[in-house]
Amino acid sequence: MVNKTIRIGTRDSELALWQAHTVQKQLNDLGYKTEIIAVKSQGDIILDKPLYELGITGIFTKTLDIAMINGQVDIAVHSMKDVPTALPIGIVQAAVLKRANVLDILVHKGNLDFLENEGTIATGSLRRQAQWWNKYPKHKVVDLRGNVNTRMQKLNDNDWNGAVFAAAGLERINLKPESFIDLDWMIPAPAQGAMVVVAMANDNFTIDALSQLNHIETEICTYIERQFLKTLEGGCTAPIGALAKYNEPNDTIEFEGVLLSIDGKQKLEISKKVDISEWKKLGFSCAKEILENGGNELMIEIKKQLKK
Image (cartoon, rainbow, N blue to C red; front, top):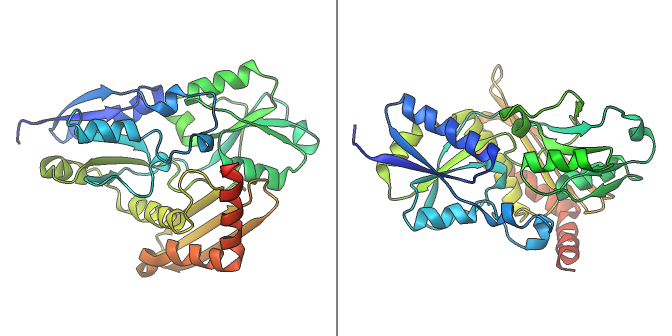
């Protein structure tokens, strides 16, 4: 074993550090030496603007990309749904870890009567906002930013009825309260619940180490979802959901994708079930089908609204 210490770059939020420590333990168990280096990202610092207003895809990953390119860290660990579909030149996806819970959940205050009437829920995600309005058009949706701890605190401090979170994030740091419901009708963000590790393309030692952590089923499903996102030109902004599931007994992939208008009034959906041999083009072909059936016009409208 070469004596190189793999330096793991991460954001300094509790969840990001949990993810970094998870990768660290797996590498240590394989006999590799590691060190964790925490870096603050602009996405954590600028909390008063919705993500889409900042006009940056990969706001949570950019700081770590620069740290890697500058040689301060060797790898970076991310929630895969935060990672842009096009990585910077010189950086490669080296491992996708086994996926956790993919669902969005509603954390509430113990009373769900508002679901039948008027209510206010909080989320910083256009995708969640649009799907919520599609189902509950009379509700008010307010912006909610910050890491999961900050968002949970803001929910407690305000008179909102609830807030939408990714189940995986809360479960990972034991922050999931008893007062929640699974939003199994809401299609998650592409790659939600998955963690990705990126490395420098020319760092063969580190890439070889990380290849041993890769979970092939998760890699394939997240590839399909992110290809769907990329083909729709979603970046981090448009209300796009995607979920691919591998069905082992009959070796098939089931895919669900959705594109909505920002106000949730328009909803273009697709669902397909194909043989595993067809996985490489599945995200692309599903996105093309959506674009040909009204998606092109909807994407133009979304981009116009986001520029305002």
